[in-house]
Length: 408
Image (cartoon, rainbow, N blue to C red; front, side, top):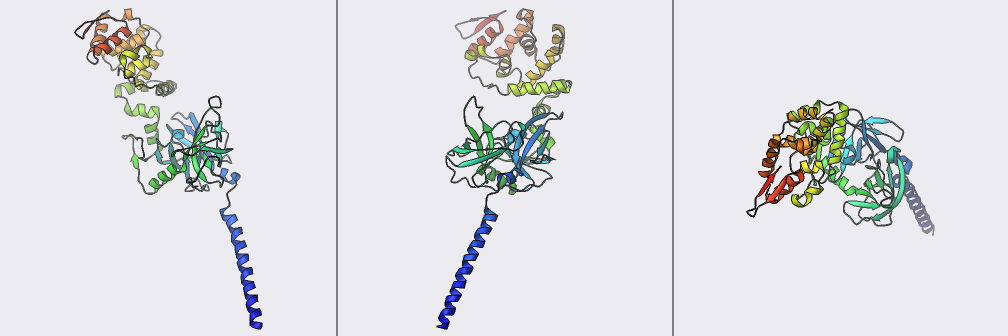
């Protein structure tokens, strides 16, 4: 009987001990694995400020720490063209970015590093995301540091994008998208203006970030210098310095790296203010789709830059430099003199005087008009040639033998 009572007591003690262990484990699990609160996560999210060569701030964006304490993730487009990058923390402390460790333009992602330490935000699982799941986005829209917005997933069917209702405004690009456990499931990158569409905002799936990080760890990327161009696709790249990044990704860096010596000397003769205006003009021109395949049909609707670029008379760099240069002239004689010095053929100079320099067609010498005819005659068939010449003011007559006669 005594042994039976002893066994019962021992069993009861074991049950109590197991129960206590379960409670302790549950409490520890809550402490260790419970989602961090948003305030603590905000300490790992930063605002990014991007500066050009002249120390002008050219853009702002967002970033966040994950994987390692000195890593910051953001969008490629946030830092594109940067000469200097700094981050600002939730406590308004500033740190410079020293290195761009890896990037991919097509996926719009980059991992940066510097001399700072943050608590990395844990990476979440995207395998079971579904419409209606709660999400939280943290970024710095319009420079408002670490603004928190909430919403739901409205569509997670696309491999690359997660569509969300949490607002994404300019400045939020590169921010973090969190699931209900406050783990990273995406990098915010785009949103529609409320006037255009309601609740259409996007994040890049963290799966693409994880893939890039694996390439960084395994050193499966190409280190670029100023003699190489980065491409699209799944390839990953790094740069040796921010100076190389600037040369590779900024408009001015590309100008310095791609212009012929003669054209660069013209560009370099301008003041910094004019150089910046040229770069802005080039950025505007880069939004035009210079890809007309039907000259005869489309030429009447072309703008002046489209005429030059589509017909390969000038590229957008040369066109922007020339228009800036001509705009500084006080009279037609001055325009004529500077155009005469350009590294161009006679026909190209005549076209520039007429289309950019405000010369009347009647002011173009007949010999120069003949030069223009010969210039295009060697490059285009009868129908396209006729359309080009008619646009320029020639009188054109077509013959039955698939030739034409033009006069001026």
